[in-house]
Length: 630
Image (cartoon, rainbow, N blue to C red; front, top):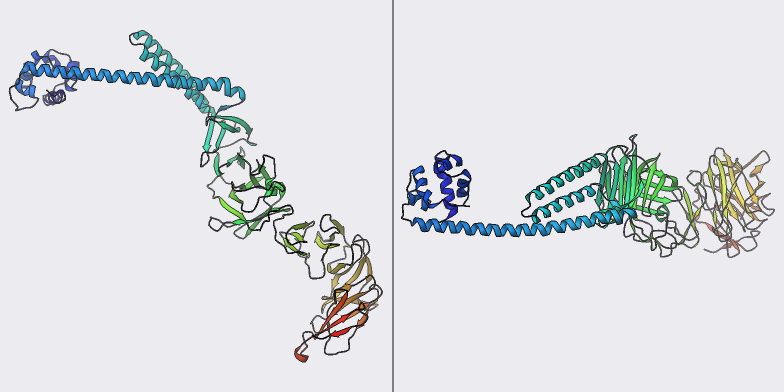
């Protein structure tokens, strides 16, 4: 007989008769529990009750035994009941065996959990905590306690089979301990907040703990076994409200928050370095160069990193951050501040490799650039746009040809070899610090430039190819330096303008120095009579030695240009004329291989012989000139 089928049959008949299990049991002189067992297939009525069941529901005993209305097939009652009882007994034994196995497994699991949790807790209390480690969340302490309590009492109850009173006492004791433990856990959760986050590949773990009442927040590092970490440092400001964290790389996490006064604050958690060793280096210096957003990334950002600081350009708008506006975190991150408010964070990506000699990022390294904000921010990947050689000893982050200069971001760079750029000290951002082909010099024996700042003109020069520099403030009457050159490291000449008039007239003087530029003396105030000595806007000078000099006087229209010659160091000049009236535009001579070369053209109004020009050469320092066939 099918016990389950029989149980369902009895339950359906009872419900159709609108009887409860208790009411049916009373009619059959059995308990409602007995009826419940029948209906669940866990028991079978005694043979003497079969007929009573049939009478209660108005059916035959055969229909009861067959568990089917209308099925009056004769059934051996004793046999059917015996089979049903045996089946129930077997199922009961099977269930008891299953329960014994479950209890056995529970005992094993509970004792394993108990031992593991106990070892963990003891390890924390007696090993980790004495060495300065804490749980990454204080709640773990109470959670482990709860596991110890529950697993311990479970094992004890399963082990004590017949000592019911001891079981009850154990459960009561465990409940008391749990209530106390949970109360402490709730109290901790009310006062302390923990933030735990893992990097993308789970290589590093961010751990923060915050006192909810004071906002005091501490950063933890040196995590062990995921659940332990050491307190490292407190945030500079107390936190008000939520804390935002964003992993910039797998070992750099940017943390943004607001302080009690509502000011935006930033902290960067770093977990590694980019150098070959663990030595400290400055992130600012490692960034020297020009950086721009990669083509395949979101955003349009450019960075210039030089001695003036970091210039950030986004959507054609620029912001300049001085060196003191930058705060370094670890050796891999830099935060840029504007009026003490964090604006941007820069992270050295993991493929960055720091040169061990210069502490500069080697070629191929990229950086991550990101806004500092409590809102969602987008990470931008930037790469260096300046070529880097293997030797970065003199790397300045700018490309420049040999014996040439370049002004970038208000900084002047020169190069003697076309590979290494040298920064010239001074402020070259003023619009008056402009250079033609004659008013600066780059040579092995003398390098000299000028710049203006705060309405003052300064001369900066080096006599040892940029290793050492000197700066001299020039006379305040100097408005613009038109020409400047040195014959050696001490002897030099300068043509300067201090005023102007109509038709390209310039007023100024020719100056001379014999001490390398430290002091200058006036040797000539221009061409003309004693009442009106002038120069021209395009005038140039050339001295080939201390006594021999040349001066050009082009008119404003560019039609003619006179050449003047001096043999007394520029005190007096005489006009040079080579006798051909068609060729009246004299340029300043040039020196090559000990000879002087002079080009004479026809000016803007010349059309003789197709507007050509003549060239002359002098081998006696300008005393005589011979025409060169061209």
